[in-house]
Image (cartoon, rainbow, N blue to C red; front, side):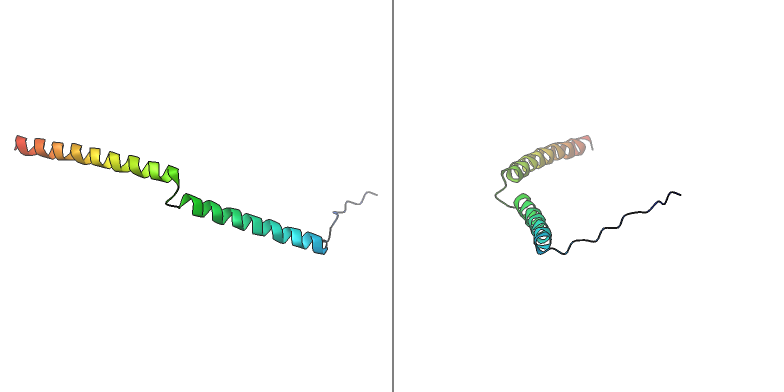
Length: 76
């Protein structure tokens, strides 16, 4: 007769494992917070470049819009 039993393992209560698990959680929290703070930082070069490009595009679109509005007034 074949008995199929599923092994059950208790989580070891070793202080080294508990300290290691806490260390991993702290490291992940620090990584997450540093990542979030870096990409929201005003000193982030990529963010500055993107902002400059968007402002330039905005001014170009505003100029085009003014030209279109002027053309519409001329047609009336």
